[in-house]
Structures are given as C-alpha cells and as structure tokens.
Length: 140
Image 1 (spheres, rainbow, N blue to C red):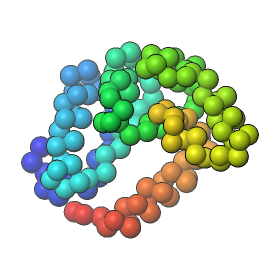
Image 2 (image 1 turned 90 degrees about the horizontal axis):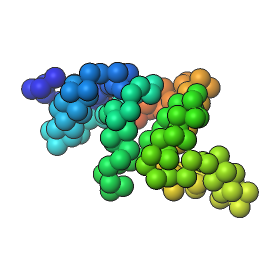
Image 3 (image 1 turned 90 degrees about the vertical axis):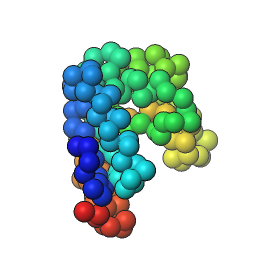
C-alpha cells in the first residue's frame, strides 16, 4: 500500500483478525496518508482477541480517538470492553436517562463506544458513506 498516489478511501475489513504485527503496520501505513491525501479510513471487524487493534485504539488518549461505533450483536463484549477502558458498562441506562431528560441524541457526545444494529442500519450506513464520498468527490 505504500507509495500509492491520491488515496481517498481505505477500508480494513475484519481488521481484528489481521496477524498482530500486521494490525499496527496497516494502521501506521494508512494513517500516513492523512497528510498526503486526507483519505477516509474505515476499520471494520467483529471482536477477536484481547489486546487487538481495536482495544489498543480504545485505550488511547481521548484527544486522539474519535467515537467508536460497534455492531450491537454482542452486548456482553461491549460491556467488557467498556469496563477495561474505565467507562460505564451500563450504556443502555445512560441512553435511557438522556432520553428521559429530553436530550434526544446528545447522549452520543459523551459516550466513546456506541452500539449500532448493523443488521437493521446497514442500508443507512452504506447510504451515508455514499453521500460523503459523493459530496467530497471521489479522488482517484
């Protein structure tokens, strides 16, 4: 992947299953393109092993990590991950409290890991991705 000109979109599918050394290499190489061509970088994976790529990202400083959206198919894994990074594992109660106070979706600004039902939201997620790419123009 090194040396490619004008990269605009990088997708890591099942990145949690890359061999451990390749996980960090793939991230390092892709993030170097941010300064070159400012690509969209999307990392997708089902949970795999402890201390993998996604867990290391979650343990980074708040200043360097954007919110993480994870498939909600395995809530016990999410609760375990939240406990490991020192976050409240009862995310459902936090969401309910915000909504009961009439704060709508403002709860998401204070939660680092957000569950998304990929099964029901996949069409909307693909549509959103398409809209972003069309709006910003596809750079070749």
